Length: 339
Ligand SMILES: NC(=O)c1ccc[n+]([C@@H]2O[C@H](COP(=O)([O-])OP(=O)(O)OC[C@H]3O[C@@H](n4cnc5c(N)ncnc54)[C@H](O)[C@@H]3O)[C@@H](O)[C@H]2O)c1
Image (cartoon, rainbow, N blue to C red; front, side, top):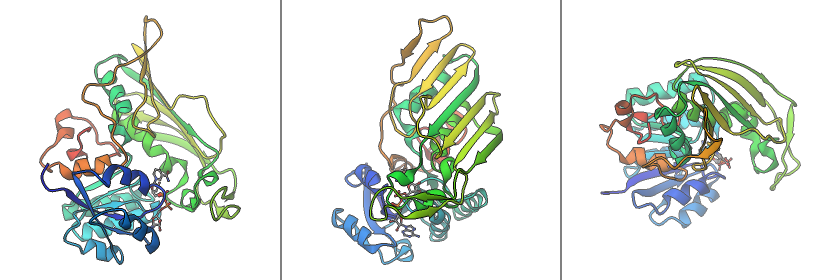
């Protein structure tokens, strides 16, 4: 495997535990430095990570020769500033979704990384898991015939019910589309190809949310973004996807993703997770069947894309080889094993 890839982590909140579960003891990765606006969070993490130190601030982390890639687990409003700073410092950056809080900032980030020649990647990497990979293999094998349509549905009453600091979900860069949409849209682009056009509508049910758990329980959070979003995506191949993502609904029986074609219908497991059964109903078949896991697919954990793309030489271009569109799981898709 050679020398471990040296990673610096910025942002050590709720999601960092999942990443550390994947990366902390991975032989291909050495977490060299960590930093958070809340230094006590960084100190707590570094105490459990042999070889990791607490950086004074982001500039200090970016100045370190032993940090090659920055893993950005900050909240969405910080993603673009952190990514721009990484590019300016010549560091690769893999971060949580969304890539930036709005499209203009995302384009600026991508342009800066391109100009600097640095790597840029963005969650979700769940698309690399057995669920979406098995579904993709089924589509590519023609089991659906010609893909015609898909649906994607994710609803909840809102993350303020469980997240101790849910403010970012209701500020610019938040909302169900930028928070949960990336899992679904990444999967749909992966399965049905790029999106040529979009129509949509959105609404906001109320102006404040009340934190349900943790030290701030009972505090109110202002809502600045749409909290129910629905739309239609026109894929370049002609298939139409109907998407609904919402912080304004209690529950749903809808399957996370269904893909339909002239020869079959496919149920794709929740793309918020790496694995799950893929079910196919063939035209003139005997009903629903669970497909075997796609050969070669695996079930990684959060952050797998980070070490995989950072460890893979830039000259390796499986995305180009397979001739498929980039997924938002991996804006550095040319080095992504799944693209
Ligand atoms: N919580 C989840 O279950 C979950 C799941 C998937 C993805 N995510 C994504 O992960 C990201 C972080 O979510 P979270 O739940 O861990 O949030 P969080 O609020 O729990 O943690 C974010 C951390 O980042 C730090 N931070 C913010 N700006 C910073 C900056 N400029 N420099 C240094 N540190 C900074 C904060 O101090 C905080 O400790 C978000 O983009 C979110 O969408 C979260």
